[in-house]
Image 1 (cartoon, rainbow, N blue to C red):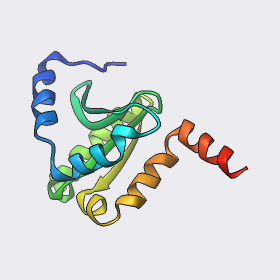
Image 2: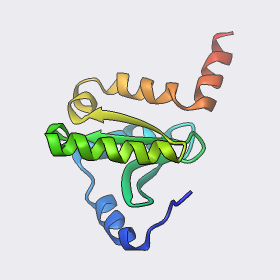
Image 3: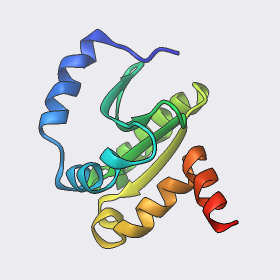
Length: 125
């Protein structure tokens, strides 16, 4: 799978240093200590994804207002199709969801991490 693009690497480093408020919240308050390793601003082919977990084959994207404009919707559809073609699952959350329903976002992410789901189920049994 094409998980590297030297041209985008510099941009990814810049984005990691300048995360949005919502990206920082999700990263520092959940993903950094999640049950599997996540990378921030990961280059995958021609794209930089917000968060990526190799072990779960999972991409997490946080969407600001530009993603709801017609051009943004189309660009996201193409991007998601590309990522799905690599066998990756893409989860999208709006910035409003991160700000107003943070716990629900975290619980939804956990449902998509196989080891977390298995561990949680074992605790219930």
